[in-house]
Amino acid sequence: MIEIERKFLVTSEAYKAEAFTKTLIKQGFLNTDPYRTVRVRIRGEKAFITVKGMSNTLGTTRFEWEKEISVEDAEALLSLCEEGVVEKIRYEIKVGYHTFEVDEFLGDNRGLTIAEIELASENEVFTSPDWLGLEVTGEAKYYNSQLSKHAYKFWNNEI
Image (cartoon, rainbow, N blue to C red; front, side):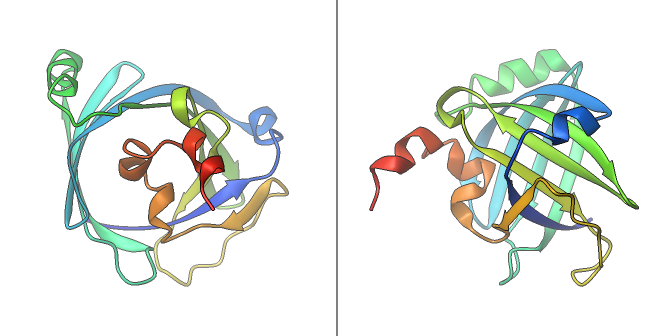
């Protein structure tokens, strides 16, 4: 399956009042190689293993394969993951014909909030809510696999 998505920073907490779901997510990475990232995720009461390929040059499109697994298997696999488990609260918000997924990061990534939208094509038009900020699609430091290695709390010390 090919995934087409765009990522944006979020400028306010207004999305929370518009959300129709709120779910805790815990995820780790068995492999963070940019050519093939392998993720283990517990999302609420369900768990998944996901393989993602390398993004195109714009960072919008890549191969994604996902399979549901038991929460028990996911917990076991999380213990084998690379250092840096990512935890976040995901809010889903319907805006026009699309659903935005807004991730409010916890732990060492607290203070970072990112919105993602999945599209049918790279040029698909969508409605931008007032809380949608700067686009960061394709900026690797915002990938969850990178946040697991280099948390947001350390970014302020960089030039």
